[in-house]
Length: 238
Length: 248
Ligand SMILES: Nc1ncnc2c1ncn2[C@@H]1O[C@H](COP(=O)(O)OP(=O)(O)OP(=O)(O)O)[C@@H](O)[C@H]1O
Ligand SMILES: [Mg+2]
Image (cartoon, rainbow over all chains, first blue to last red; front, top):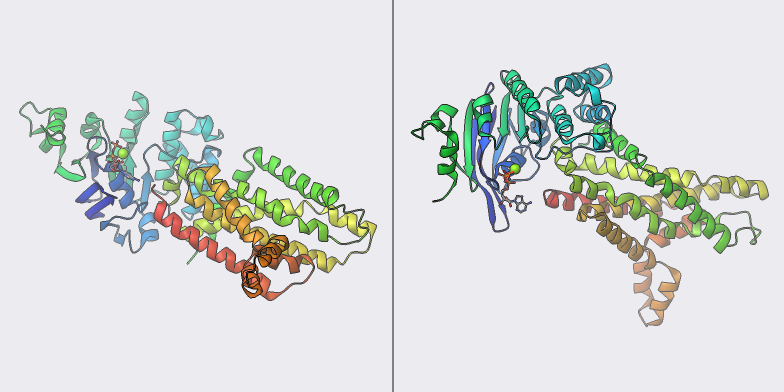
């Protein structure tokens, strides 16, 4: 459903992403691991069409993000890093705006907005303006925005960042629930999340993929089977 | 191809966001007070004892010079600062749709400010017997002039993530585009010995010259084409800048 083909991004002399390739099929939840500055967000930004790659491309549901960006973007739900949203709008207005842009109208639009609010457990704050929400609720508002149109491909950059333990649990459950019908990519720094939700994980370091396998396969790289040790070995040079 | 529904959704959000903060009302009041003060105070509207709006429209370029950059500085700069640009441009939206939505929202906002000056038309109609056609023409010219300034503002807003810098850039470009057609400046330059053909050629590119005839009640197809041309050009420039700088 999602094919990433040797994506490369240079910012001047900095090589942020260097020849990253992988595929994600329906039913898979791909974990994106890697130290700070590894190139996770940059890769996601290229897949979602926010920044153009220096070379390579991504194909989403058969649409190339470079040659047919609008069709590709229709298939994607994206939760960017730091969950941006229009702070002066209320939660409902914000989601209605997103729904309109996604092409919904009238009663259908209201239904989609209500469903997204319910799924993201935002009922209690739906009339509140986003700037008055706590960080976790803002995160959930942006999450609601990403799933509003029931996308085939869902890309989330640190979706549980800033959530309390209960909310982290709920978001993970939701990801698992949705995974049957979608191809999902989640980046995270929380290694337990890999076990909890991912069917496969990719480790990126310095812009290149250094490991790609199921959580069990990654674990097998350490005699004690500890993911954090494997992660350190893969991403720290000596 | 632009999808009008998308443009409309962006337009509505942007237009409403003006009224989310008191700044919009401050802006509208400032516009009316400034226009009123310059017309009645500085230009001595009543003392002229003529039933036309020439002195009223005379000041519009200078009012726009100050207030349009204030209305446009946030259009892209704010999206960059808060990171919502990443949200907007990963939705199924083309850059043209986003630019049009933003541009039209700012234009409609200035249009409201302009429409709120209607009491001056009523006053003039009540005191004398003005040429309403000429007044309509003046308003149309003023609105087109505002559109050109706004397109410049949209471009300036795309250049920087700082609203202050966007404001200054928009003001500088608008000022330049105005004074190259402002009579005192033209006369001064002519005295330096610059050939008059050159001076006039440059002046015809200015925002001022094309407003001058419309202010006096003459609608010329060339003037309208000029303004639409400036708007298209500046929005195209904004397109290039936004496309190149969206991630930084
Ligand atoms: N706009 C930019 N201009 C210049 N360099 C950039 C830009 N965006 C990212 N980089 C660089 O690219 C590299 C990868 O950044 P990226 O944000 O993708 O990392 P990340 O894996 O998401 O890290 P984190 O875990 O901290 O979120 C970093 O070295 C960063 O400094
Ligand atoms: Mg990141």
